[in-house]
Image (cartoon, one colour):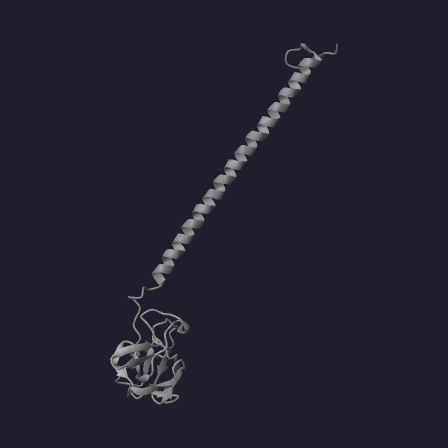
Length: 214
């Protein structure tokens, strides 16, 4: 049997003892690697956590600064340009014809012309939500162009300016809620009046125009 002398004790070791010591060293080495790996992982996780916290703090600081730099709507100064109203614009409404048949449509040319004296002019929403076409039968409101939502179209108009657009009445009776014209009932035969007005300014309106549905 082969022996190996231990450097510490001077005693000879058997092959079994040598194998046992080798296994111990291997186990010790593996344990050391695992411990070192765990320590490295903890340090890496801690570093990433610190970076993430710093990033969130930075984002919060930037957001707070941006909130300070952008004033709220109540803090923003109002435009010095006035809204268009009866004192500085004139509205007119011209139908494409004096009559049309049941189930047909009627086009109107809606016009707003500046007649004020201010050099700055005035602002007006010339969309069908701002310049509203109203169809009536007597006092009964039959149809309005602003029932369905549309994008606003603000224009600055001044001396000599005139804005025109076409508004189509599909010959139907609308309700208080938006609906497709194909789903609404056609109006009956009769005489109807059409008038153009500016939303929010009841006195700013055109002369009424008579339309006959045959």
